[in-house]
Image (cartoon, rainbow, N blue to C red):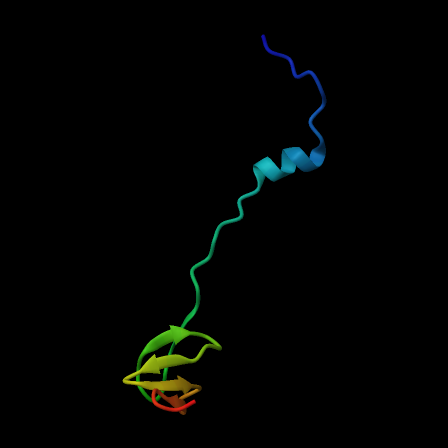
Length: 62
């Protein structure tokens, strides 16, 4: 029967036993365009950049 050569530390043992999982990003819906987007992020829709339901920039600007 196999025997460990050294004692496994509590930290190493617990790392193996964790059950952390990746979570899906939270999706918001823009009140103006109805498009889904990530929270706290601006998104493009029909050549315009929207943030919190307002137009921030148009494609030809900047």
